[in-house]
Image (cartoon, rainbow, N blue to C red; front, side, top):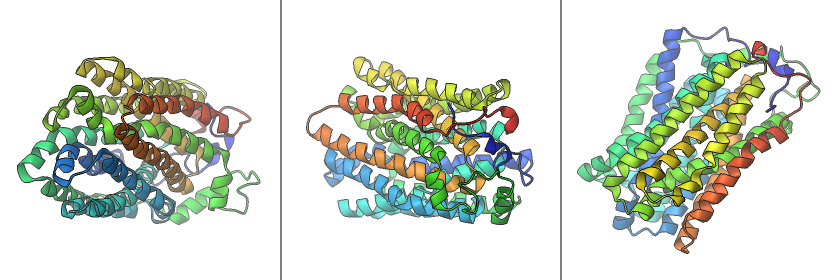
Length: 438
């Protein structure tokens, strides 16, 4: 796989930054970023595990639920162009505080909703505020770690989403049955506000890079005719083939994650007639495997990056293998045992998380630090558009009696095309990007 050229040897994200905190502080801040990722997925997935209760009490159809899932995606799509710019402008410390605080309030608002329209408004707000999550996390880790250690840190961060998806079906259905679904939403929102207090304390103990620092770093970038005199405008970002290589791969690969995140409990309910209480263990096992995939994918990429001369080849091999594994999703419909289907879907999501980690690592290799937030947001925006379309279509296909086979086949085919799009759209390089360049 090729994604960047020799210009990255002198770019702002390449070298170990002078502002990097100590290892002890890195670990604490990484732990907070991981915790934020867990809260992010608990907030967004809670509606999925409580779907049977909400549908029964509020009279939702499959199409209603599909529309609510799509509204969440639409909120993110509306917000991404702004949040990418905002993250690059404000920097990691302030962006994390705004992101977690705002989405926690939006999550709590679900507990006050009564009508479908009010739920839709809460989902829209949650999608818009959680749009800051990914650009902020990537920007934060790009500031804290150099390229040699970044893939592993990204793997740990990506595993957080799977941990949130494990905790939600295991703990929250029982909690909702105990205190009611409204209080459940209010409590998870309150957890985010406690996180904000902890972030204010720990993030104040290090020196974060400033916008002026980024500007100084950009002076060292080789001029290639496109960036000269244009700075970091959207015109430059959109004209860069590397941007569209990353965006194309993101669109094609994100569909699988969004599909299973919102429809996995329903899939198991249809195939094996599991109620809310019985869903916890198989769903938790699937996301536990996904978390392992994120960590293994990041560790493997880091190991290969240190042992091979061409970093882009190392990343590309992991990406291709991960895509093949993720594309195995339709095999879950070919087995007749719950735990066989659990194993198939767990391996598929492990492949997805490994792919996602290495795609983000590739992004931070290829994109100057001053535009990481915007390129990440653009990729997430387009990925959410694809996910939004698939989520809405899934509700209608199921309501029409179509079943899950065509839906899973579309996601699998898209995944097989993701590494192809990444390679096809990548800018050509005069020489390989090596581990020594970073």
